Image (cartoon, rainbow, N blue to C red; front, side, top):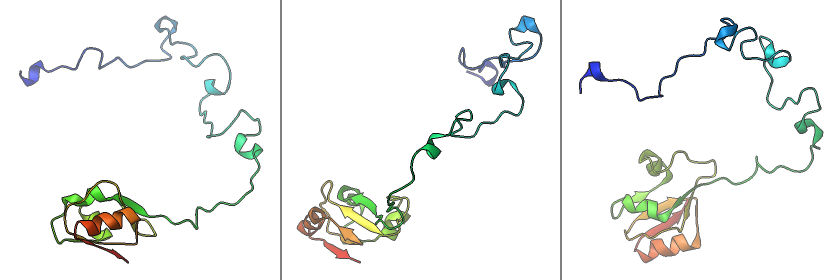
Length: 148
């Protein structure tokens, strides 16, 4: 195979649609936009949620009730089996996990270790929260679970 023999797969490259170039093309006159209406005009732009002048759903529904989003606890969660890749006697914190690429970001309330999977290495884990099963599995392997 040589560079001058390369070509795309059949059907991968299509001719572009040239609209408004006469009636014989099939896309002449109205250029595939239809006769009338908002979409036939130039500069058409309909915002998200617009319902043609009808009162939009987000305005028809009542706005009431309590939203706890700003006050809820948010933790970055990780299962125990993700810690198996670290060596024995390692001290693991949220920053170390982030640097190693195990987690993407540390949420505002910190790190929570869940008990999913098994761990066989003796490690010290420092986190903001642990599940009971996670503490039991870490200590059974000879490690320590320290709450920050």
